[in-house]
Amino acid sequence: MSCVLFTATGCTRCKIVKSFMVNKGIPFEEKDMKTDGKEDFKKFYSANRGLITRGKDGVEFPILTDGEVIRQGIGASIAYLSAGKRLDGFFCVGTLHKEWVDGIHPCSGNPENAAELLEVLRFLKKNAMKLQVETTGINSDILKHILEEGLADKVVMNVVGPTVLYSKILRKPLVESDILKSIPLVAQFPCYQFQTTIAPIIRQEGDVSEISYLTPAEIGETAKLIEEGTGSKNNPYLIRMFRPAEAKDERLKSIEPLVSLFPYRTAARAYQVLTEIEKLY
Image (cartoon, rainbow, N blue to C red):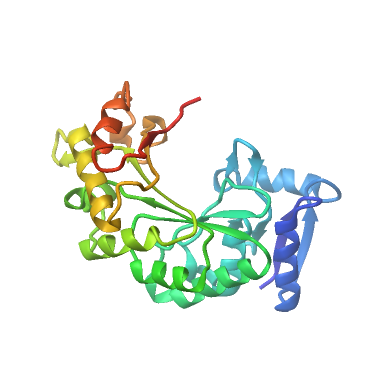
């Protein structure tokens, strides 16, 4: 494997990935986008714009490429260098900065590769990174190992809806008991949060699909699920707004945005008294 590593001057995460590659004997060429690699990165970014995430704070570094794939951020880069594509799904580009690393999704990858995922998390922790893990509750066994080893400083669980709607919302088969196991695990982490996005659901497929948002009553059921799983009404619980423009399914992009989240908060607070709604700016 011969790689190019795009870095930024003063980037601690870049230094960690460089050190990993040196220690593993992985040959690479470094191109600092702020100095002598500036023009090279401009060309690379222009040619691969659709594969590189630019957030509100700019482009996350490092960016790793071996000529075949591109991996962005410390987590995805270390994962690819450690296990190739086997850890795809577990990592995405994060939004946190300094010592915090997010974009870690134990629910999204192949659980058969859990041991390699845990190795990456151990490496990040050994390098003084604080890890925020996000889950829908799938792959609860992996979450259990993360808890037991102290490999996450914060966990966010996206409880997407009542269990009866989980498969329909995520559009994938799942085992209900997996979700039920994850809820009490999440509440055992040193810092945690439950959240639900008030998403539209394709309730009936067909020539004319039946689509409607989660209802306040269904959010009440979701909050009750959290209460039953944790034995507490006092969990941090955030209700989030769905943004049609960001939907991956074209059918959901034309749906009208919700006017207010207050009816959802009211329904949820019957079971989770600390429920808050997302602040929109």
